[in-house]
Length: 298
Ligand SMILES: [Zn+2]
Ligand SMILES: [Zn+2]
Image 1 (tube, rainbow, N blue to C red):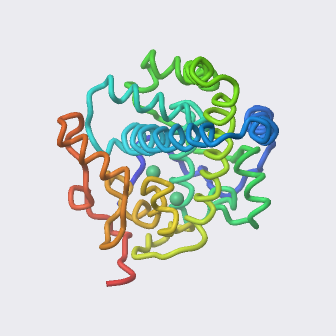
Image 2: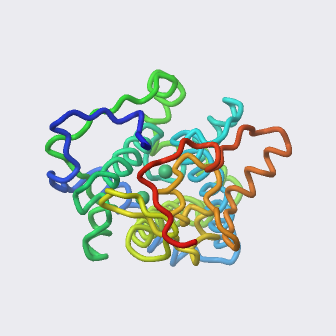
Image 3: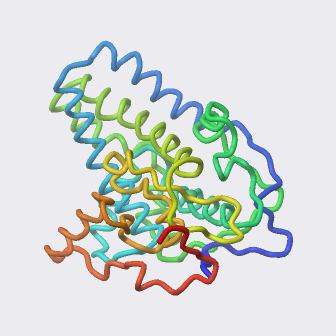
């Protein structure tokens, strides 16, 4: 049985009953970024600024969001020196979704809820697209009987992570200043505001597709929500869109498990392994067998 060690449940814990509330912080943060991206992006567009957006977004999503935040901090699917973990997780904070502890909580709560017999539509992206967009980007969910979190001490009591958590919005500043110094306001608009807006909206969009449409090789029995592989987004998401594979083998450092699937994040990990920067990359074969997992296609 796959269990999430950070989630502590009791008989009352329930993933279904609760309500969605508007988050003033998300409205101001994401709303402000989107507004600045639309207005500022229009007035400051240039090919160079677009290039800055593409480069910063690709590097930050690959090494920050996917390798740092998701595969290392959340799933511990490979080992690396602590300085590299801090660097990658900090890049993950710069994506603009939340701090390290906030990201662990959001991810694990959703992951736990989706594996229950029933869960609130919020967790499975099960409302129509526009409503789901509003919920996921501007709101939070409050469960009536939530489980409690037991996040590992090496994260909760770590001063560096506590600092990143408290200052996650301000973490845009160093990159923002660097961009301003080199390329002025247009680089800041495209390297910060457009990038954060596209990353936050893209994160929601892939989450929506990866729980509603696509292809599946695995079924997690008794789970209310299944993950789907979304191959057309594989390159853009650094392999994260092979979400059916991820639901089946959450601890795997490689999300591309079948012939023809390409996981850019995994390719980057393999290169870093060759350089001696990372080691002990976890694959499905290294994970404990899950009784609740069935193969759909052979
Ligand atoms: Zn999922
Ligand atoms: Zn995950």
